[in-house]
Length: 371
Image 1 (spheres, rainbow, N blue to C red):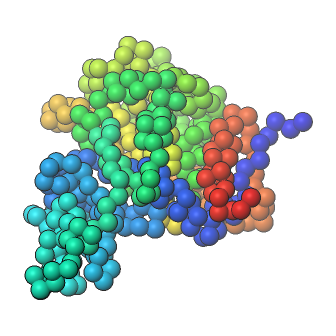
Image 2: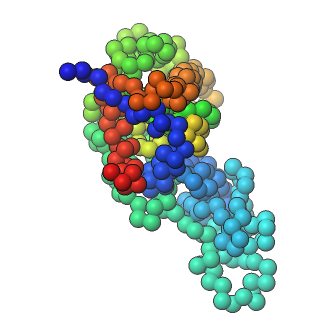
């Protein structure tokens, strides 16, 4: 009996109708990480983000809470904010007919509004979506009844690390963004997740990473059993492009977390990478069957950034890893429509967890497939 595991068929990566079902049944029903809390640090600061088929307006209200709304004026449907980011003082005003909404989403002004006493300012306010803040990031859910944040998001960290304390020791809410890079990847979002979940490719395309984490040369990823962190090489001093010392470590991590790298996948679109002196946090924004924006933050201690420490070697390591990975994904994408991949490919035993991911995707789409 063959030990190889079949993959999804190529059409799962190219078919716009499948992508549309994923938008509806995955991205619009699960918790989706949209922004760093510091991106909307003050009341009126905002970001616009695409989640599934919806444009979202993410902001912070006067009470200090992060809020998120569908980016649609309730009057005639004009997009309220066209900019990717910005700030307003007290209201978001539609450019079409000047309907204005408070930071809490309530309709507060419109031409001749006083002559329309039957307009309910709450009912015709912006359409709110569910919001949580955790790990210093803003997470949203478009579902009327969102799934358990504790089970789906926090649970992914517990499943990977063994407990929540292990990630909380890295103090992500207190860290600051030292560098952010936005990648426009011409590949399906699932190819990117599959790539991140396995290390069968590491010795082939990641020489710098394998130097720092030599066990990756064996083809097993850092996620292959609970609590495992890949250990730095004997001659490696830091998680840097050349293995040289990094910056001041996060002082609250446990002794067993020192000199180790941990990777977490939080479905459907977050990767968290933990090393002793910084955290690398990826967020994917799937825009089409063959296009995904990936925003990657490098998070460091505030005093490290204030000191003007050189971050370049730390950033360069995973920037190279990202570019190597995304090139591989882009190399795969055109072949997903080839007759050679019409029935899919195969996974080797060390990639078994990708098979589990494929089952998860098909299960999520199960209700609309009618099978």
